[in-house]
Image (cartoon, rainbow, N blue to C red; front, top):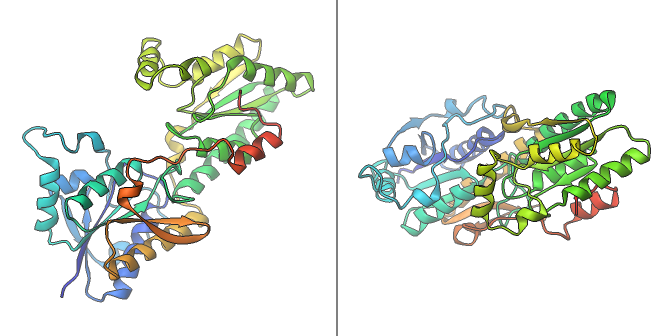
Length: 356
């Protein structure tokens, strides 16, 4: 029996995608001689439109250290998957093209939204195996996702460099870190970079308490301060609003995130303040050695799942052991930072303020 599988990467890109693709492919070639691998272009859009190409072992050579994704990626929101647009039934098209490509399994690399679509396809009867990718580290059921540690390294480098100019000019530097729903990346980056204040979505902050923390530092003779703030952070007044109300209020004020508003409030307390937004810098470049090893491990495990005929699952790591979780259990869940998390305790013990 000839084996034929597809691979796609969906959602935002991040370091480690190519390393994971390589891990899956090389392990499959080792386990199943003659297996055919089909690369699906630009995530689920490629599956919907039937855009793909057959790959060979040479396609997976030299990509371990390469950032981004050789397959391309796109955001195709889960909430629109069941919506017929331009006479295109996306779910039906994906099922049709899966069969047209003669696939035995589809490997899906992505984050939360991607895993929801992967579960949808699994429920529709397709053989699907997921792999957890995101710099946000917010996929339920796994201690870590590939891409996260590289983003922490990059974020820490930003904070390290900002430290020197903040010290030279005696400024408060407000650094906005990616993370719309969760604060894992901001938390780890803040601790690793020596931030004085860390603001994350899980802990609504009081701007007045942030200013007080800065004043205490100034009173102790510290001429500068570093704040890492997640793009999804919000203050205590916004915490009383529903998500839609919060978005509408910000839109009316011409805001996307709270970062600039916070910087203005700090400046009004007579601190020389600047905002730094590294943005997509945190998604770019070569994966760290940790992520290369993790991506390879996840890829090999996913290939082993296929060889054992285990589908409808996603790869995970828990307590330093690689496992798999049902897609149905992972889909729709977000791993947020719990108040009792060890890293929260660590930060508070170091004197870092959360503005609460």
